[in-house]
Length: 214
Image (tube, rainbow, N blue to C red):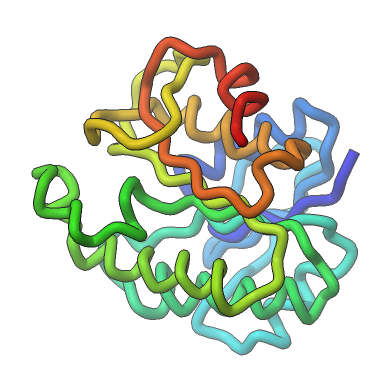
């Protein structure tokens, strides 16, 4: 269906996302600092992605892709250069490459800092949320990309449920496979363009929740 570039292609979410994208018939170019750690599947091309590098180099990796995912994360070790500026560089690279579709994995309430202190799980990752705030804000206000921002609650390594709740509410949890499925499924859902989607586990099937985004 599409050729898709995944930034942060060796991570936990990326691994599940790549499986879902391939299952849907997409070709994936997955970029990571350690490309040998990217899942080995047909239709997946691993490439070395250095988010500390220049935008021109990053853009060269995206040539021929029709969409970009940013699912990279430093897990608190490199917040400025990976989670914040690294994300911005991939946005700039997408624009240079003529790519319009951009899907961001963010964090619940990342754009609403007044809420961070209300939820212990968010208060514990304030520095991460600051990085995601600036990345999300740049995507919305400083690019002309057709973006979708997914802001999940805390990620867990539990099995998929296939069900979610979208919108504001308690910062609970999300199994990683469910987050990955939402990321994969919004690719072709034009009704999610220009939307920030807060998500957590729930009772609505993923396909139905996405279809109902307005």
